[in-house]
Image 1 (cartoon, helix red, strand yellow):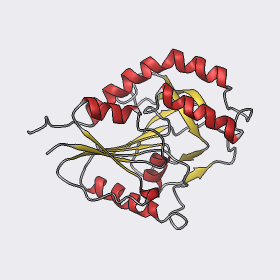
Image 2 (cartoon, rainbow, N blue to C red):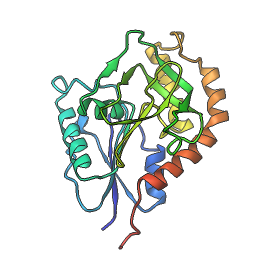
Image 3 (tube, helix red, strand yellow):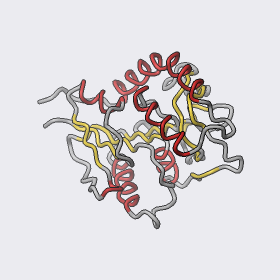
Amino acid sequence: MTQRILCVRHETDPTDDRITTWCNSNGVKADIRRPCQGDDLGDVTDNLAGVVVYGGNYNAYDSALHPFLNKEYRMIDAAMQANVPLLGICQGAQMIAHHLGAFAGTLEHGTYEFGYYEVTPTDTGHDILPQAMHMPQSHYHTFDLPTGARHIARNAVYENQAFVVGDHVVGFQFHPEQTPTGFRRWQKRGHDWGIYGRPNVQDETAQTALMNVHDPALETWFKRFMDRYFETRPQGA
């Protein structure tokens, strides 16, 4: 039975991110579902090698306003109960934190991160993030660390950039799955949203320069992370 990574998405962008590419290169099915468009998430099955909850524009705490989020919370809980590797990215990390009883939302300063920002490992985070790296970011929400979580990354604006819970749950505020192609789509949206010019938002020229310098190292690191985190069995094993 072909193994699969359940990819829970919140937008209709092309599926050309690094997680989908990794799946295609490793004989793993990228099982893409969009509950926001009515997709069911199914159950935890023997061939489920991991669950990724992607970023998006929905508040982690708005399940009453957006009932489809309840489907996602049920899958988050089921994956944790079954010790299936669970990765939350941006909104996904906020949802995991919220599900575990921690705050998720905006801070009083409301500062945006939109561009490529340096993220630094904590003293206990070097096994996940060996060194400081510039990461793609697009957010102004954040999370507190859930009880029992290990704090693994921070930066100057948002103290909580990444956490680990146990051996099978990781949350990233940043977007290592994002490619230059995908970030250029974000840049176009940034103009549409009128986000450029806001405090702490990098201008497009700076974003592109940082992307060109730092993306190769990001790609290498994230591929190694996925190789280790989503340990998959050879097809037919």
